[in-house]
Length: 213
Image (cartoon, rainbow, N blue to C red; front, side, top):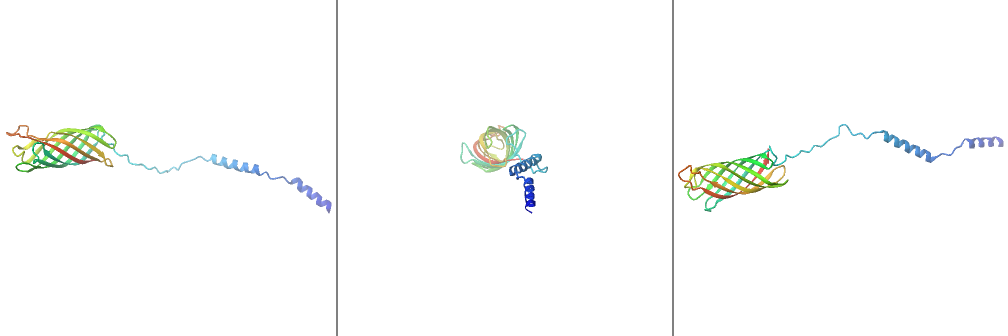
């Protein structure tokens, strides 16, 4: 009996081998790393791309704008002669920061004598000689045609030319819209096409908002 037990113990000892924990861990970690490397970093085919709208650049050649403007003017010789205008203006940039502006205005004229109202069609060049991203400074000059229900001045004529020139600023107010403010010399004269041509020179302050098409 003792001899049989001894033989079983010797056989068990001979078959026993210690478990190498380090080798198994290295094998497991190595296999895991190889699995990750074998899988490429693929992006989903239907990935969602957010496209943000790109605002139209202000003052670029070939662009159109329109605006609503209004102003107040006082005669340089007689403070009793004033006028108020309100109208719409269309701008086309013939070159970068240089626009050709067509305006149509309603005028309310207060003057010594009979007050009157009229319609003024204008055409001007406006050059933004300082043009920043959020503001600009411009100079302008042009002329127009004015038709009133009574003579302006009261001893003048009901048809006049309206040459004008001035300076102003624009300021970005968001969404490619611009606030405009300026001052200008505003002249009314019939250029001697009538018997009397007294003329009238006024200093105007005006403001408005310009919108993109």
